[in-house]
Length: 373
Image 1: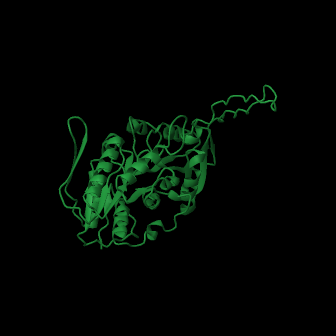
Image 2: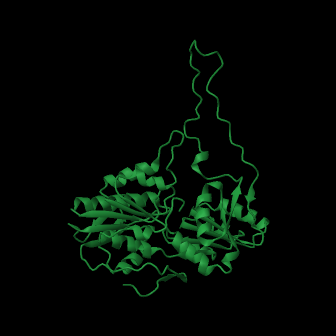
Image 3: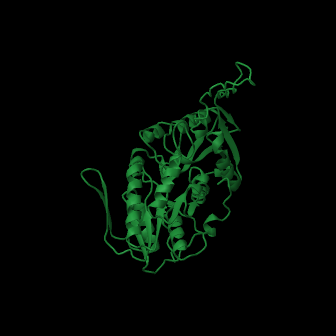
C-alpha cells in the first residue's frame, strides 16, 4: 500500500484513494510514444515494470511495433493518450493492440486518458461521426476494454462494443481549488458558454459557491454546425399542394451581444471545462470577466492540448492561472508560460488498472458521480 503522497508541480493528490500493489506476474504494461512520463508514473505506482515494446517509424513513415516479451495468456494494458500528433497516436495503439491479440494475449485493455476525435461525435454536413469510426477500429483491433477520462460527450461510450470506463478528473481539480486558491470561498464558478453550464453547476454545488454564465459569444459546440439537414428540399409536384408552398426554412440564429449572467464583481472567477485547446474564447471570456470586476481569473480543464500560440496568448491575457491535468503532455507549453499548472491524475488511472486486473468493483471511482459531471 502506498504511504507517500506523490507530487507534481507541488500539488497534492486526493488522500482518499489508496492502492494495493498487484504482485501477480500476468499483467503487462505497454506504452506508445504519446506520453512516456505518464506511463512511467503509472508503472511506478503499480510496482510493475513496463514491458519491452519498441514503437518507431520507418523512413516511409510506416509505424512499426516490436513486442519483446511474451504476452500469451496475460492481461495487457496499453497506455496511449491523444496529443497533437493524434493520427500517429491512434495507429500506434491499433497496431499494438492487434499485435497483442494475434500473440494470444488473454485481454487487451487500452488506457486512453484523452480520446482523440472525441469532439467529432455529431453529424455534420456531408461528414460523418468520426468518434464512432474510431470506436469501431479500436474494437476490431482486439481491444477488450477502454479506460478513459472526461469524454467530451458521455454518449461516446455507446459507440464502443466493449466496456468503457469514463473516469472523472473533477476530484483532483476540486481539491486544487480548495487547497491552492487563497480565499476560494469568495469565488464564483463561471460557465464559458451555456453549453458548459451543467459542469459549472456541478462544481458550484460541491464547493457551495455561486455560478455565472457567459452568453452571447460564438460557441464552439457542434450544435451550431450545419449537419446536412438544412439543404433546401425540392418542392413536390403534387395536385394536393398549392404552388409556391414548401417546407419552411429554419430561421438563422442571431446571438446577442456578449453578456455575463451573474455578479462577478470583486470575486475570483473560475472557468471550468473538459478541454482547453484554442484559447481565444477563454481569453475573450476572461477580458469580459475582468471588465465586470473579477479581480482574479482561473481556468480549470481536464485536458490541456494548448495548441499553436496558446502559451503566448495566456501569458498576455488577464487569466491568472490555467490548471490542467497530465492526461496530455505539455511540458513545452509550461516552459513558455508560467501561468500553466499541472495536476497529476496517474493515481486514478493506476487504481482503475488495479481494480480491473483484480476483478474488483469500479464503483468506488464513480462515487457521487452524477449525469452533470
